[in-house]
Amino acid sequence: MPEAEKKSMEEIISFAKRRGFIFPSSEIYGGFASVYDYGPYGVELANNIKKTWWKEMVQKNDNIVGLDSSIFMHPKVWEASGHVGGFADPLAECKNCHTRLRVDHLLEEIGVFADEKMSEEEINKLFEENKKKIKCPKCGSSDFSEAKKFNLLVKSNLGNFTGDWTKDPAYLRGETCQGIYINFKNVLDTVRVKIPFGIAQVGKSFRNEITARQFIFRKREFEQMEMQFFTHPDRAMDDYERWREKRWNYFVNILKLNEKNLKWHQHENLVFYAKAAWDIEYQYPFGFKEMEGVHYRTDYDLKQHSKFSGQDLSYRDPKTNEKYIPHIVETSVGVERIFLAVMTDFYTKEKLNDGSERTVLRLPNILAPIKVAIFPLLKNKPDLVQKAREIFENLSNDFMCEFDDNGNIGKRYRRQDEIGTPYCITVDFDTLENETVTIRDRDTMKQERIKIDELRNFLQIKLN
Ligand code: GAP
Image (cartoon, rainbow, N blue to C red; front, side, top):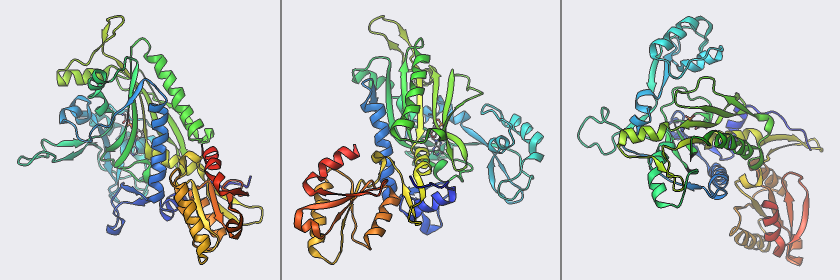
């Protein structure tokens, strides 16, 4: 296997843009901070990530069902969840360069832990005590303003046509799981599920993140994949451990991330209602950071929504007749955090035996944006082009394919290697004689000749 090199964040950002994976939003207007767009290959990769998650969470578990709740919900949802009152990060400004910074992150850099529950006063005291040791990451100054708690919920004027909507806003959801909690009873009453069961959903969330300069790691509009598992309090801890194991295995066995780049991080200070909280961290180019949270949230969420809505959200066990508020085990991960982990893990520069270099995205087949590329050897030979087009039309029924007749074959291989395409098919003059093509493997770079009518079968076996 050729030697692989370590990659930097800058390299990944520039590669993601150059090869149509990720574009900064509104670039022709100078960009829009912390918002990004998926390009043609990015949207395929993100969709494939979501498909693997859905398959592992919903399709393969007979006690997990899907949901797609709205981005907008009744504003009381966010009061009940605690987001209106408490979903706030401490913000300070560097007095020298005016960069806004997360105070808890600045403290973390020097090994000081600021608890989420700390009041503005408490965090300012801690900040003051440590200010001299902290430097602005942009200009190096230690002259900061006081910390202010800044609420992360994004407000809108939805449905408000007359009054001052800033006082009575509708919020864009800050997390998808609230849509699950408020539909708990609907699901229970309409689908044949019994506790323990889970509800899974994938969708956009919005947060007014303060410092969001880590590419797609911390966006203001992002996508979450969350599953809430409703269970009896007596078995909740066992379920929790089972889900921890399952989620770890998803990253290792399904996404094939290098296990060396993964680790568990236990929350030291639990929020008052949680009984256990561990994150799966990934080693991004800027260090180990949270990719997914697996948390045991007890009965807090359903109790809160019961209290604020006045509805009974308890469950009656059909066998024992016991009535209780179910406990919740949550698994929560951002699509972008997986996307960035996948890019980091599989983006490789290789030195080949002949001394040349190639960039290859060594994606597992299930994640590859394009599964098969089809080339006519020469674009000015109509017979070759027509045959290659026929193969494209045939295979694109079953696989995401790309047709490419531009440049020499070597360059076309390199372009496909860069975007992670597992197989390239070339139609040459022999094809016209004997109905065979060459098929080239991305990783081994070996080519073999194969009959056109065996292609589908070959790919089905290899790609699955
Ligand atoms: N329902 C629990 C919840 O939302 P969280 O730790 O705030 O908990 C869960 O978020 C996951 O969502 C994180 O582990 C991360 O993968 C993703 N996430 C959170 N904020 C994000 C952001 N600003 N940009 C991208 N992903 C984010």
